[in-house]
Amino acid sequence: MGRKKRRQPNSQQSFCPFVDVEGKLQQAISLYQAGQLQQTEQICQQILRDFPQHADALHLLGVIACQVEEYKIATDFD
Image (tube, rainbow, N blue to C red; front, side, top):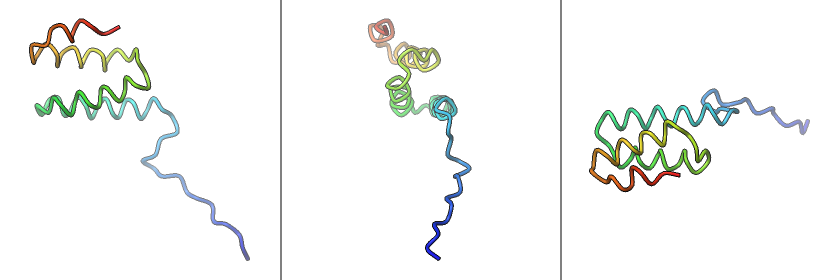
């Protein structure tokens, strides 16, 4: 009869941006623990684009910078 079906929400889709950020952060931590520093850094940078003062993402980037002996980068976060 021309009715549109109602779209069911995806159970993996979040309506709260903070849930997505926390999921990304958990992914970054897992990658860090696996030694994937470049991927960890990329995810933290993505988080910081939306939430520039996200403490955990900033901390993890600082840890990575110290680990690769980029001390200037580790202290340059504003």
